[in-house]
Length: 311
Image (cartoon, rainbow, N blue to C red; front, side):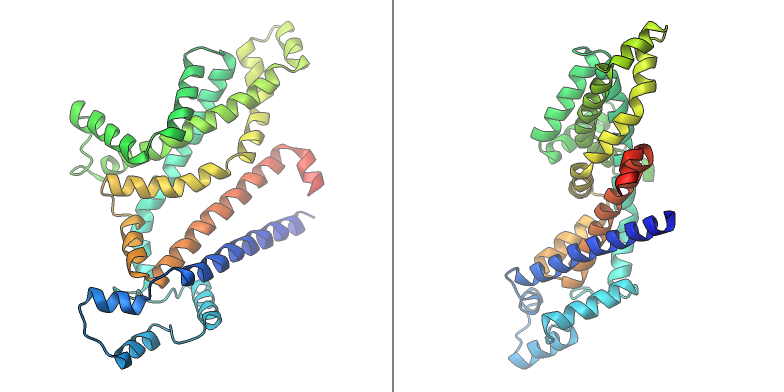
């Protein structure tokens, strides 16, 4: 039974990923701008129609879109991601060089937001209208209203210029990554804390909480003991927007703090319609979001037996 469940989850994950990359592949081809014309104009080449046809044949653009999709999908699944139109280098090597930076920023920032937001949400539910509650509300509002690049510049000015705690552009890897991680975490902490607060508040109003306090437990220990499982279940159900934000937040932080991640290569690929780079990047992002949602769902099913029975 467990093996069937795992197989079903893996199959659903793959089909969800396949649907996203398929749609994105064909949508990219609808974006105005021909890669050959853009490349020739950037290189200032006076090319005839025959030369353009040679470029299209070399890049595989002379085939039908269906054929291009089949070739790309098979190549991606076999780790042959093709060559960049502009750089002429394997896409796998281009993206892997920046992926470790982007992954470090995104995953660490998301983990920091989860831990900080969960603890802050618990404190806000335990002491309503106190400092923790007001701080979580301020972070939630700020995360929805403030532009990411402005927050990044503020962090840079406070921590690097005024306090001189770090050297973001001349220090080691840890110093180079600290500000981008804080920026990514900032925009997710508020929403996570409010979701967690609401979940703990549901438990705080339950009759068994009064029974636990009557038996001698403190409000804090009773709320934590009875509420943390429910809070995790609720949080995992509402985590999808933050998984998507991590992608955009990581890209903004890389630009603001000059981190050599994927964003620089992505911007150039969008400008030049470098399809192999763009499609592989979108496939990686789709994998991150789909797998993240499936892991969150698996954790919910592990914590809530009712969901396991419904599966």
